[in-house]
Length: 76
Image (tube, rainbow, N blue to C red):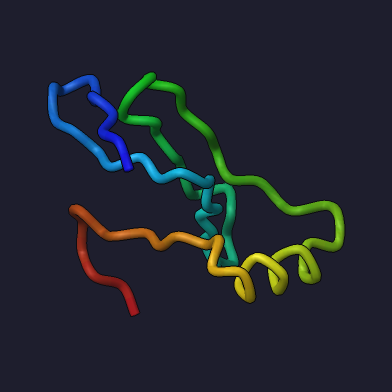
C-alpha cells in the first residue's frame, strides 16, 4: 500500500487494486464527487444500463469501498 498526496497536503492510502464506490440514492443528480488529489468533479447521473449483475460481482469479490459523511446535517 502506498500514499497519495492530496491538494491540501494531506495523505490518502492507495491500494494495490482499484475499488468502486457506490451511492444508493433516489436522486443521483444531487450528488457531486470531488477528487481531492486532482480537483476533478463528477456529478451523479442515472445509470442507463443494467448494472445490477456487475455490482453483485464486485460485492462478492470485496471490490467496493464505502463513503464517509464529513459534514452537513444527518438525513434519515
